[in-house]
Each structure stands twice: as C-alpha cells, then as structure tokens.
Image (cartoon, rainbow, N blue to C red; front, side, top):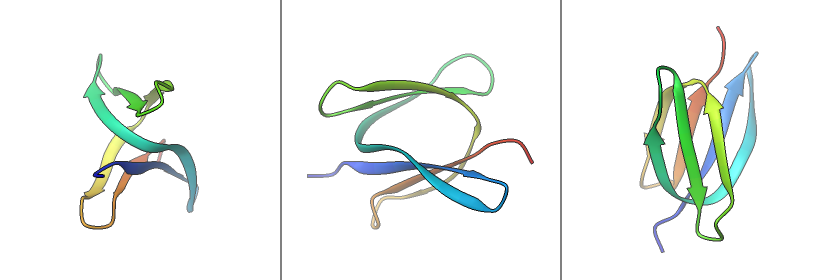
Length: 64
C-alpha cells in the first residue's frame, strides 16, 4: 500500500496528525484537506513542508 503518515511541525517538534493518509487536497488559502483509508478526515491550516514518498511521510509546518 502507498499510504503515508501526515505530521505537523511546530515549534521545533513533529506531531502525528493522521496515519494511512491517501488523499491530500489543497483547500482555501493555507488550508489542506486530509483523508485516510478509513474515512477519517481533517482540515489543517499550515503550509506543506515536505513529502517523502519513499518514507511514506507528509510534513506540514504551522506558524513560524
């Protein structure tokens, strides 16, 4: 499977947002819609910092 885990980087630390993410969609300015294979959804206010497909990681940065 090709799902990834999504993290938020804030104040020097990474926090897990959602596991098994298979949909990332930009919404309005500065917001992203995330959905995992189980149907769990989140909308976050952050900027995209890094996507590592090999490591199955999506990292967003908040603030800073």
